[in-house]
Image (tube, rainbow, N blue to C red; front, side, top):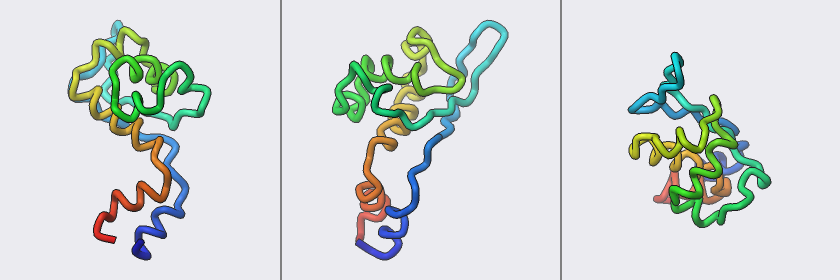
Length: 111
């Protein structure tokens, strides 16, 4: 592993990630254009297989996202997300589940 990859692997993992939506969510008068994801704790992953979350299984995302989004999305709102937005959010969530070492290797594949 290169020095840069080692340095990145030692940095604390980001606890939040903002995801701009291609198709905003309308909730009454409110229009949600950006969702903030919080790194899930183990209890917030209950009822789903980690492999399903990593594979961005729609049913798994539908269970986990209402627990870790701000503003909090309901299961119905998650089900009605634009597929492109669901992929962006699922990718961000999957990134939270990777170890520091693996993230460093993925960010610097040449090392």
